[in-house]
View 1 (tube, one colour):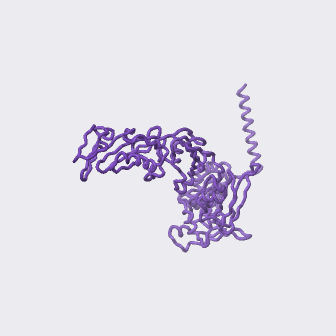
View 2 (view 1 turned 90 degrees about the vertical axis):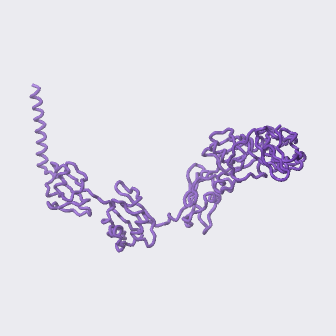
Length: 505
């Protein structure tokens, strides 16, 4: 036994018990004050070493923490003497204390264990202050079964919740996250609702686990999808009223863009497994309600569905293909919109947009649309706001792509697009296209069609501009010319036959 280092002799209730003093290598705790005694730091009864600390959410609530086999406690004494007993709960759920004996611990709250131990220790160690504290929580096994990826047993501890163990087991897509059953060994059950836990942060929906718990994940039913003007579109399991009100609560309610003039649509399968639609109208500002079934799909319409729109065609940022050669984008029409405000709301013009040939196509009843030219170069580049124009409902803004090439088509060797050259005339472009074919008409019959659609007759000094097209027409043969060509072809064939016969003789 290790001797006490004492300033003056004091009665030592633990001096006769070598278990209290521990091994000679234990550190000593200095005690100050009149008549103080320095004693060994600790004794271990059933516990070997303190486990590494674990992360906790908050200080342990002694009225909620349930003790069990493997928990490690410190029984601290202070006053005339200072020492500590380290005690652990054995596999039978008991702990042993020197001079006291065994104390049943398993299944009791930390507060109850503390009260029971203090009442028994008080008679054996009079004159000393003491208290019990939890040093390290135990680890234990729980069972995770039913609709999970890896059913089986998992190691956990009393400060871990249902969500942590389920993340290890892995839930399946059709597994419920709202009706997770936790069965305790004593027969009691608890239910975890991880959806509400994640939405509200209320830990009551995500309970702690106990030794030997069985966590069962059932199939989700009913499951309903919601989309449209709600804050959290998605798929949800309904477990309470199973109606539209519960679904809207889970989806976070309506967005500011909800349309209360359009009904909410519910799509479901009938008895013949055919999809049918049911519409639920708003009663003023009050949302409608109806019972929902598994696999229903709910769509909440927004104000964008009653919003009038304007069509932009051509080189607009974010435009989608309209056909093989054209893109378009549709934007909401706002009273008072101008060309500038609409283009800025669309995201701007793409680099190849032809700012000088843009226009507004405005419909006219019983007539062809009116074409209003736009000088977007002045409006967007030089910021000349006098070039801006007011938009009317039904207008279409067309911004054609800029073209830097000249098209050569018709009776030429290689028809196609050719790089624009300001020094080239029509003849030079035709030469680049491989020249006129044998069936081409004379050069003075070639036509130039400019980017505005105007046709020009051939002139030697005519210079094509970017986007222009050169058309080389084919020659129309007369009947006599066709007959002459046929006879010439027949003659060639007969000559070939004669040569073949002569060669074989």
